[in-house]
Every structure is written in C-alpha cells, then in structure tokens.
Image (cartoon, rainbow, N blue to C red):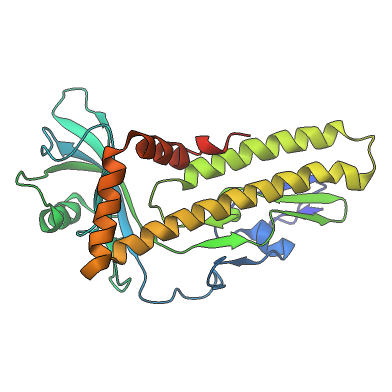
Length: 277
C-alpha cells in the first residue's frame, strides 16, 4: 500500500524509488544511506575540509585557447578547473562547454545559480593559457558538494510489495566524471528488465521469483560502489597540489592523455558502457 499526501492510496506490487538523495521511498523502507568508506550518514553535516564545485553549461567565445582540445576533457588540477566542449553554436561564434570550478576547503558560500560575471571572474583567476577564455552566456548552473553515499541495499521486500532503488535514491557522488545521470539511466533499464522477468516467473516459488530482483539490485549496487570509488580517487588527486604527490598526479594525467587505451577505457567507464550486461 502506497499513501500520498492528499490522503489517497494505491496498492503497488513494485515501488521504484528514484526521488533523489533525500529519497522518501528509501527513508520509509528503512534503508541506510551512508558513505561506503567513512560510514558518514548523508543526513549528517559533511566533514571539512571537503571539495565542492560550481558547475555550469556556458557558451564560450571561439576560438578557444590552443591548449584546449575540442574532443576531450581539459583538466587543470592545479587550478581545480575542468572544461568539456559540448557543441558549437549555429553562427559559429561560440561553443557550449561544461565548466567545473572546484573549491578545496568546502567553506566558501558558493552561488546557487552562478552568473556569467561570476564564472568569468573565476576563469580569469584559474586560466593557465595565454589566451583569454570569454563567457558569452550561461545556460544552466548550480553548486555541488562532493558527498558520497550508497544505500546498504537496493532491494527490500515489504509485505507483498517489492521496493527497488535507482539513481540518486541509491547512490550519490561527486560530479567529477559526469557519471551520475549515466549510472541512473543504466539502473532504470536494468530494473525494468528485472521487473519484466519477475512478472514472467509468476509460476515459480516466491523465493525463486524474487531472486531476479535480488540479483539485479546487488549488481546495480556494485556498479554504484565502483563509481563512488573512482570519483573518490579523482577527489584525492585534486588535493595533491604540493610536493611529490603533485608530481605523481601530473605524471598520471600526462600518461592518460597520450595513451589511446587509457583514454578509451576512461570514456567507457564514464559513459557506463564498460558495464554492459
């Protein structure tokens, strides 16, 4: 039985929670949501220092500086600045780019809706190139905390109802790598197939029938854990701005840039295509 705020209710055999990091479905089901490594609850204030981001889809004036490639991510870890070219404008004067601006102590009062002036000022401070990066407009923008959390299970049986978690209801992590949406879409597709198989197994014993949902939930949780592990490693690299750690980090980045296999694997991981099932 699912009840709504207006007092109405329905009987549902399947309840899929995809309602964000503050998921009502997950909360009602009593499923814990914690950082899988630190054990920190998502409902607790984040520990400082932490890495936070302003993220914006902005139109930059063409041509871009020669150091920025149009077919890959430009990552400047020393300045905590990442830029991903997306598409050119119809008149050819601008190019839409996804811009990440990182703040390493987590204490700044970052803007909820960053303006073109704010993005321009930050780019002027961080730009390592000789040519200026010019913002023409900002399409969308927001701020993010690099918090990580993973549900302790993506499936729970409550009476005759099957509760499954997908997307941010099951996992949250830093936007580094842009994998959140891709991972959530893969969750949804996998759960849809699992529910279809569950319905087809109506003649099986309940425990055997539910196995397909359990296996799906375990698989999706492992994928969520893998992504959180990867994004946490990227987070740590951002902090490596001094001494031998900085040298090691920059050597790793340079190796990835010039190695076709490493670039291809990174693209497969970020897109989620490396986990085809």
